[in-house]
Image (cartoon, rainbow, N blue to C red; front, top):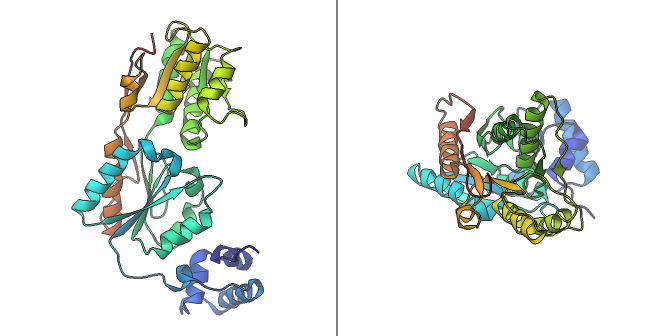
Length: 329
């Protein structure tokens, strides 16, 4: 039997999570009719309040919750370093929460975050959590999103405009007469790829053309390498853009194995620059993104929100630099 949660009660009663919590904690600010609705929903569903509903602390804990998708953990080390360095300066501790799509119950993650009595939450560009930000903000917990432009009540963001980066890259190719450009799906980072496709689509539309080469991986292809190896047997594009270094490397290897020369026959560009892009042969053209600064600025914004300091801009954009290397002409 599915466990009844505070979310089920809120939905049943047609109220916010915060209202359910107030009723459970016998707050006087809830009006009688609303209180009756919540109590009736609790009784109908057989809900048993847990620590999230009963133990919401009012005191500060100097602890920040960091939520990242497990698939991203290996290449956001510099973001975490920047975040931790600033957290130390302001005497904050970090609690790490990882999410695995299809495995992690997001309700459990949200409950764990609130039960941990964190003062604030920083989320690394994960669509699963971003879609549910309002549920966390209902508890008056400041939130900073890394990597995706968004803002709202107690919500700020620090990001690099990936859409703009890809728009400029694709626009430059189109100006040169190169329009056979493809983008590979990245199942682990749907938010980033969505921005990439938007950028390419905009560039194509401004040239009176339509972007159609979004390479969506089939279910049977467990890796980018397996997919590209099969795909390039019967297809070729002048330029292929990947989000992660491993995807770019997989594309280069698959291209070679199918008789293509990189960059003579196929140019390959990677969005996220890492040290491995320079180690690969040919070295991979990519965008230098200030990963450390993304973490550091995000934590500084969080401290401002927690200390009621003025936040001049809730959406802070950091710059990027395109670094052409041997995988492009």
